[in-house]
Length: 98
Image (cartoon, rainbow, N blue to C red; front, side):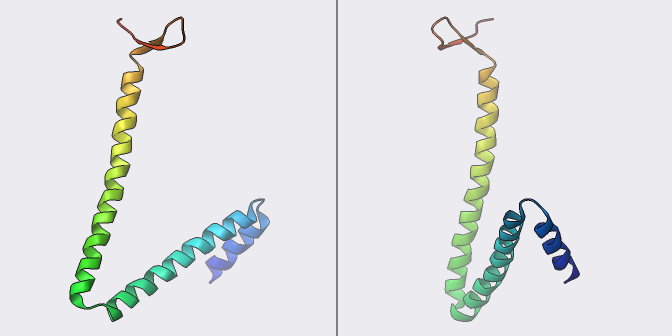
């Protein structure tokens, strides 16, 4: 509790106090709702439906990690290709032959 009070005192004293408070409140809310959803799923769904739910949830999580990794690959590839480009007199890109 002491940590929460210190965080609130810091956030209130800061210039962006509303930002700190809303961001912290959003994270606490996500934590509470996440546990509530897990509890509701475990109490309401049968074991078979829980399995389907967690499989779909795992696939969505893997897709998010794939998309994060793919953006790094695209960024690295485009940065590498950018080194071989140059502007011509018409301000268009041309491949650098040198």
